[in-house]
Image (cartoon, rainbow, N blue to C red; front, side, top):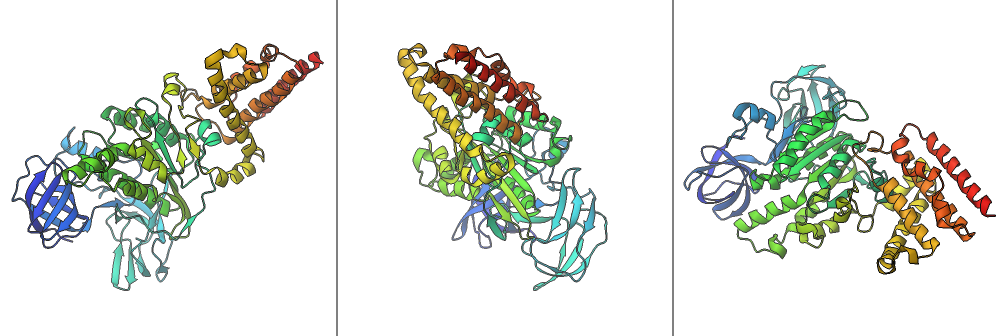
Length: 589
């Protein structure tokens, strides 16, 4: 639809503009303000006036300038070329913009989100005469060496296929098919547009029974998340939120990663932009960028674009989910997004709620996380979107509104602990504050994959950690020497578990990632020490004697010494450990 004048600027208040004389505008319509054509969106309509949220710097805009309507909502372009691209919060390609305008984005600069000149090799999978349902697959494009991009019928289109092109190379704007719909013939291209604030339709929601394997032991074993699940990672400055998300992005078994840097510091985003292309995907041996989309919206960019960035990211994730992929969305951080909501709400003079956040903050958080899920797509394919959102509570205070409201709408909570981070224990996920509500759903998968004792072993070690907390309170009062050997052994086993299992070195080639088989075997060795050691202590052996077993040093170092591809070495270590325990027991008898 061609642009038309829908009103004139009456008042400018930072990124919020009031327009008057508005007679032909829609709610949430994409608009352009002034002769520099600043991108904006109508967020309030009242009589002949409209409130517009502008996604660029409004310096120099003055009353009386025209506001141009586009006739469509703020949308993203979906098609081949998304993977490996770096966008800002409203899907402007930053690398192309840099080539045109240098280090600073020129106001009103409009470049297509997807390249209009690049040709993609399209292989059709349907034929003329076929009935096409919304979301059906027209064909495929090999977008990168690791991602096959399925070209979809837009969800709003349904009808009989009249014509489709033969296999060949096409741009995203060239017509590849003609569909006869109830409203007439419609041409389809390799790309289509979708409003960012509306979730893409699906056929059905499926139960979340398959875990998202991250390779991080504290997550997979203690607090697992299911594919299609939602996670909050709250933590104060320096506790490792971003690094935890980086590790998950690199090692998790999602097929597509969408990383949203929402209001983060520029140096952190620079690290992401420079390091991600260098990272090697452990499954394919190729660059991680071949299955990653980056959205960079730093804290010095316009605050309103920060508000839109997470919707841009999750819409792209839903698009790849509709192709049958498993997608993981990293939102870093939703606190900066909530702060953008607060600033925009204040400029619109809305009634504030707790700590100045708008009253609709819980609703917006819920709408975002509810777009996650394991779905049957319109093309009858299973696909999922998992959302892992970092939260940055001021001062590490988990009682502040964003953290508390987020906890209401997520089912997995990985609370980062300042003391663990200061002690260089990473990932600094607290085993006391964290929880996962996906345990029951993913237990059958674990028991089928690695053995029937997984749930009971996990419950046993969690109970031990709880006992250690209670004993540590006693130790602070009377010291460890006042405890009997049986209680000191609890402290000893928990220390072993924390150092040899929970702590993980992201820079070590062996320890940075653990398969589920390695995790289960490591846990079994530690629990064998606990069970056999407890029995031996009851028979009169001292704790000092028990700790002098030489094989115990190998157990402490097993995470570094035994690789994921050598699980049989864990069995050998367990056998040697049990023989050593047998010898200690025999000497006592």
